[in-house]
Image 1 (cartoon, rainbow, N blue to C red):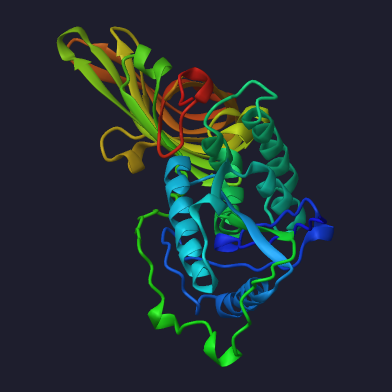
Image 2 (image 1 turned 180 degrees about the vertical axis):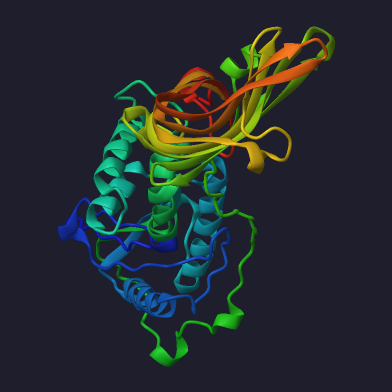
Amino acid sequence: MIKKLFFIALVFYGGCLSAQTVHEVRDSVKIYFKQGKIDLVPELRDNQRALDRIADSLRTSYADSVYRLEKILVVGGASPEGSVELNKKLSEKRAGVLFDYLSRYGTLPDSLKTTDFIGRDWNGLIRLVQDDPKVPYKEETLALLREIADEAQGNATSKGDHLGRIQRLRGGVSYSYMYKTLFPELRASRLYLWYEKTWNPIAPIPQPKTEIFVPPVDTVVIHDTIYVNIPCPEKPFYMDVRTNMLYDALLIPNIGVEFYLGRDWSVVANWMYGWWKRDHSHWYWRAYGGDIAVRKWFGRAAKEKPLTGHHLGVYGQIFTYDFETGGRGYMGGKPGGTLWDKMNWAAGVEYGYSLPVARRLNIDFTIGVGYWGGTYHEYKPVDDCYVWQSTKQRHWFGPTKAEVSLVWLIGRGNYNKEKGGKQ
């Protein structure tokens, strides 16, 4: 008895078919489903034509006295962002819908029907990225996916949080593209049909085609339907709140915020306000003002997660001060008035490194070099008065900024996985 194997591949959500024995393929079609649903919709994409083709194939095989159906296998898979357990249940439901639909063309005993679920199809995603020239940061994305695929297969030590690592790559640009363009091709199930070539002396006589048409769409009965709300993934968001511990040590309260702009750029703004005085002892310790900087992040750590690692930037500062501890005092800017009336200012370039120390905490070391200009006054306390001594102009080239900041990371995906992050 000569056996011949052929299969019909039905790919839900446009899954990628990978036939292992191409010379045995007799036919293949794709059947698409809406996201999170199992309803068979002929009007969706090219479903109607695919259903007509499979109907013709099954009518021919059931009427043929040479081939006998021996086995049907449905293999399902999931894309990276979906819950594996949820996709497994969804795959089983869709398999049942297809079994019901195919049973219209002949009896399908339960002994012939089997299912399998392969989980997240990392290798399928790698193939899709390789074939798509439009994937942002393609080579970096492929390198990360291959590393994850090895971990998933047990060939390497897992670094955990596979999906989070993809979402954090290059600020989520690659992930957003893959989610919209490639992930639908991975939400896949495949239907395999095995036939045995044999003689059937009592094979049914084929009926006229007019009597075996596929029933109209509105008569299709689906015994079970589930609706699953699968939210679109939220784009990663990175920001931080910080305080410069050097200013804190000098009793100058301060706070800053930083926002990640994408493509390794960020903007940070800081504000300080310390206004202490004790007139009876001629003690003044005053400073207030702020700065803003634009930063470019670089290096390996910055590629793995934004707002981490090396950064270069340009900055501008405005501030005023009044320091006097019983002797000669120094006041930056014009006495009285607002900050804009009496401010000093500085501008320059900065370099820094943000070091992870906990899951949501970094320490940022930054030094800035530039020009400091503005007017300042010298005075002396005499009895209950402050006697003006001189007015001078500040012209300083050198370090004008120093930070050792405690940084609190805020936002979706903005945590250090090596410091207590999700595993």
